Image (tube, rainbow, N blue to C red; front, side, top):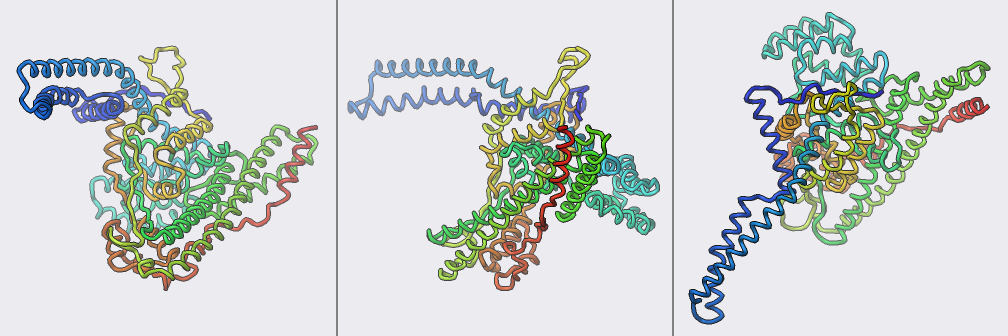
Length: 629
């Protein structure tokens, strides 16, 4: 499918004073970035020249003459120095004028690139969602559309009614949810409690029946039923391992390794960073003797490779399931978020078994539909290719797991023979030991300009002239997007971001995945680029960074991998500084942590694959023989 987004207007948010203020703030923000890269500030330059050409020159001339000749300069000498300073300052002013004239075109070009990227990326995010819905059929298509509606924070009661009708297929339930939303908007939570009590026995079974097919939609419905709404400051959850899938698709030149949702998440990440998002990243390291530091680094490298290999395997599985869901005439109707890996694997294998069976049956019929046979064979061939890559990734997990265990044993041997502070988390900057550091993932002005300059030509490629032949001025440009273009653009964004934020590093991926993305659902296609810039910057600025999960994950890694004991001051620091839960930290002990609780041993996330069915290959061979005759 080709999605086309037409912009019927490109005006500010409104003609109210607040709308004009947003427009002005957005343009000023873009202008500051462009001038910071290519322009020269006139005020600071002129003041600098006056200061150097005036007092600094006079003081320097008098002091230097006195030191060299032992007396003050004469009037003629002073006239010489002043005349020299004036000529030098004038030459500097003229040079500055020429430089600004030469860079004015570059500044305007930078502004055009930034306006285009800021204007188009929010629209592309919406178009990707639409493409994802279009790939589905039947009930899955309706459920996905309803789930997207329920994610919208400012959805009206009528919108809630529509989403619930699509999900539960019950008009009475839809009316109840719409009433609850109406009461929530004016703060009547007592009336919401009354409705929950009156209709709980009716609504809860409906939500429970939906939970298996669409876990996320069921959770959203449950929150709506109790009048709970996600705070915009909390953002929206990112899809796990989406960066790895995009990078793998780029490295192996195979778009099937990533999904449309991955493209949407990459668009969102780029838009966040362009508008000033700073993503916190917690890392820990050892400060002290080289032998201990080297052993620590080896464990960290092995742990990073192991976690990335796990992510690769699960990403391959999701890519396979999504491919089968997006392909018509398969048993996989959707790849709903929140489903466990073993369920995804079971559904994918069942769909591939069904395809192989249909191909075998069609090959035995003399008057079979060759076009349909070719379509089924192509689908099964692509699915088998993805399955083989998933199997290779799962094999890598085992090898990296063994390497991690060897590195941990070496660290334990060195740590046990070292000083006591080797097995304690050190708070403060003094002495040797393990420490947690906080870093930030962000783009400076030069990086933002480079990113926008790289993406602008790709976005221009997605624009087409109006079919009615009107000019671009009277009829704003339209965007066209299909699945292939969306994935290619996501790959270009990942490649463009790599030199600035190092997306390929495991610690960077973990930091991005552990934080929520900003919710840009309030941005609409009719807003101008300047208005979008102002609103996006405000949304990013108000986003709350929750580091509690990262802190708890790091604490678990320290205890399980490095056998580090967490003293009370370290627990207090993690709880106070990063919001880690005290009850979770209190349960972590290197001596009490069981073998099954240790991440380097517990590998339950990876479902067993078993042997690759041979009848898949036999079906493909039969289809090839029929089609080549």
